[in-house]
Length: 291
Image (cartoon, rainbow, N blue to C red; front, side, top):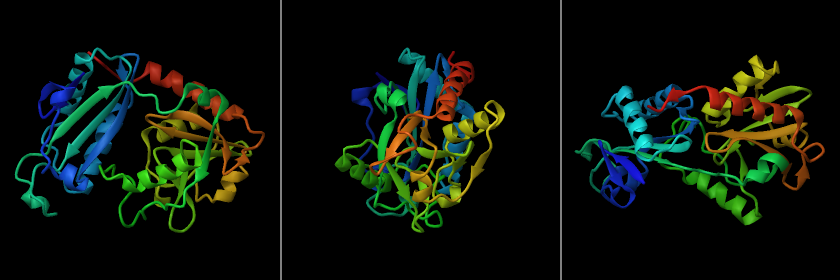
């Protein structure tokens, strides 16, 4: 496997950064998770824009242009002979000292691009649906740190993920400090009620996911389904007609049980299955060519 590291392609074993990099010391950096399908990078512009926005929000200057980042990503995919891949793009603050002061990072930010295969959930869960639980770990307040900043510090999500592991499931629903549904540890959440689609707004602590936005577009334009961004309670989740999660790695996956309660009749719903089909079609036909 070849990894892009600061302008060079190196082997996995040689992909190393300093222990004094503030990305390692403090999680001071940003990242993006991107998918390539059938020789095309899905929603590449949107992902690059979000990476730059995240960096801007934490006052981190990315030392190359978006065009050069695009070229570096394609170069990494070609070096690994990948047409279908999960791409992890990372920008750290750079090498500094043991203090918090980012001004002490005297070397340029580190840029890392990893391209590999990924399977977040077993394939059978996409057909039968998955079970989740509600986490006691609350989502960090959006007025403390915007959920739209994809920072390298994912401890909040990891703590909730541990609750899923203890419960014997693969994902948890995270609530915000006011008790409203925010998102899951790595996915956005949608529910269907009376033929309409509902999802939490960013102000509730939800990331405006790229896959989330693609599904909203598909629901409105292809499936002709009304979509609402509204505050949702766990009661709304329990009493939904359908439930599903979205994410770059997860794509679109049905949820059929929450906190030991079946969602409707306990099988993936028609709208969910339609959106899964539409999303798969979209990913195979659109994107920046790998060439």
